[in-house]
Image 1 (tube, rainbow, N blue to C red):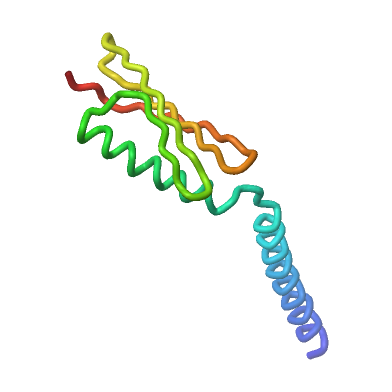
Image 2 (image 1 turned 90 degrees about the vertical axis):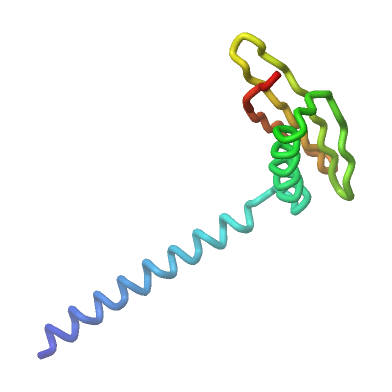
Length: 107
């Protein structure tokens, strides 16, 4: 009877240790995030702008200023492949991030 309770205790301690390890790793990943909330807002803005560009076929370079971040759009048209490369530059404080999107080009 004592051997089975010892095995059960070891298994329970192992399961608890694994759970604690997973929680600790998630905590460390959250702590180490260095991107601000403005970065994630800008990413959503880029998705919205991309859909609007596809609808309106507006391929001119633009700068969009929002509270806490700026998005700069540059469009490069490839007539041969019928594609447009959209390059977005996100500026949040002192950080800059580049996001590229490839969309179809309709004349």
